[in-house]
Amino acid sequence: MRMKTLLLTAALCCGLTNAALADDWHTSPWGPEDEIGAANLITPESVLDAAKLVKTGKTYNLGIVVGKDTPAFSPRSMSITVLQPNQITTEGLGTNGMTYNDDIFMGWLGIGPQIDGLGHIGIKHTYYNGLAGADVAKADGLAKLGLEKLPPIVARGVMLDMAAFYGQDIVKEGTAYTKDDIMAAAKAQGVELKKGDVVLFHSGWLDLLDGETPDHDRYVKVEPGLGISGAEYLAEIGVVAVGADTWGLEAVPFENGADGVFAVHQILIPQNGIYILENMDTRALANDKAYEFMFVLGVTRMKGAVQMMINPTAIR
Image (cartoon, rainbow, N blue to C red; front, side, top):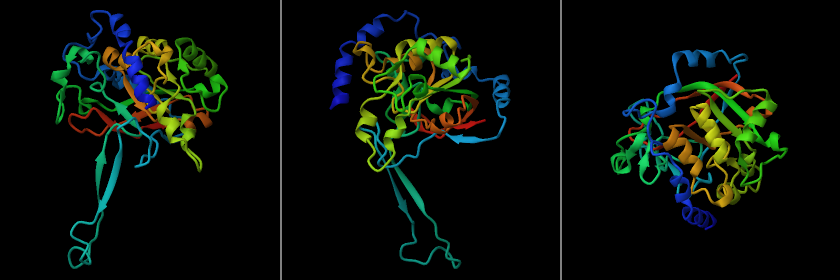
């Protein structure tokens, strides 16, 4: 109920954000036919530069383990059913008795570790590159901006440890990472954010899901995260994607309570074609102080998909 109240309250102010938009906010720098946004910044040269960051060969799973109990933005859920087709009353298939298990997935693709594609968020039913909602969203999949268009994301990755920056084990919910905070955190870590980067924020929020009594309710109702000025700053730099160890990337309750519903999502996705990565497990990176690495992500090419569960890899 609290999330519904937040959404309703912020919706009353949504016009403030949209009214401030320039008339050409939806014009893509990559042309009127572009459907991949900031992924255009990935080039053979930038991939080679990212590969040079690999010094030890150590790899990190960035996706959390997802299951039926994983807390998710309502009403999202998932389940898996395992079957043994045509084997229950037999000793298996053929005289050699071959047996096997299959699974049926039932659920939302935007659950657990996920990428938000460019067809996910719009502004008054206008989506990235000025595409009208009616031309984008079809019942059987996106007609435009589907994730099957996205090339592999291979880029320089940067992790900003906001928990260390604020001096907190778990950053307090509602904390918005401002432009000044991001610049100061990067300076403290000795890293520079660059065009074409994938930027990940560590807050310690995933620790709420650990232990004998995980706090699922708190985890999915509120969160620290990227603020308005921080999002605008990352867009100005020209990053490819932004991720965090939280379910929704941006600060909830929404920043100042007056900037609209998921306004950071609107700045990144429809306005700038920047992808969002949620529920990223940054804990091992933070423990190792691994602030710079090669980031690799290949998304399942399901035609017309809005979002997708993912498990990116960081390589040092």
